[in-house]
Length: 336
Image (tube, rainbow, N blue to C red; front, side, top):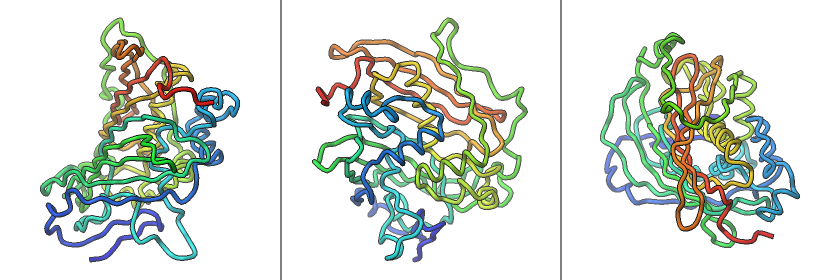
């Protein structure tokens, strides 16, 4: 067995797919290499042009949370190592899905479901315990043949307080030669991109338009410390069966969070996000959010709002998400 090592941060153990059932239930705990910090937060918010004052305004954020807080979409960012370290690469990666010996040479994220219980504050030292929940049988898709790996991660701070959970599905596969996703084969004319699924008369969210330039994609790599080559190397991305270099999951999470928070307001607290990626958001695309309010409700005396936010481009629907906000703010008590 061997590790594939892509630009020093993302690597996966390669080997025959044997005894996969033995891997279900295994877990690793990774300590964040650096504390939550304002500079990385600013990189991330700038990439998304996100004006949320909890990421920029120390006084406003302190009044709500005790300090500037990390965007929820940066949950995995804090765990990623730098692309080079004097002592060499770490013994294991930050994601349990990459520790399983599988024959596929590449990977792509499929879906995430996260809950947010308490803020990740500037100065916090985080840890992440990642557990394998399921491994699918061998599956053939438009991009190749491989395995879907489901993991569940729990993020804690230096005091052991549980801050967030994240269930993730990743596809590790051998790319198909000239598969449906290769080249321009997965592109559709703009006229076939599909209309909004929002019911007539629904309260709509303000649209965000985000051109997918290579500059923004590369800024996303720096902002998230996600140096996987599909996010900055056109040739590698096309070899995976995609049209071009593409945004990573954290960008898409941050984009829909920005759209939802703009509607809910900076006082509101994101409690849950489900995200499913249908096709990559690639260089040259123009992304547009399409959001609406599904339901306003009360639960345990709190005012909650459920939102649906899709992300579309010229080639169709790329991402579909559901978000829940607590409009009364974080329920964790006085942060001052």
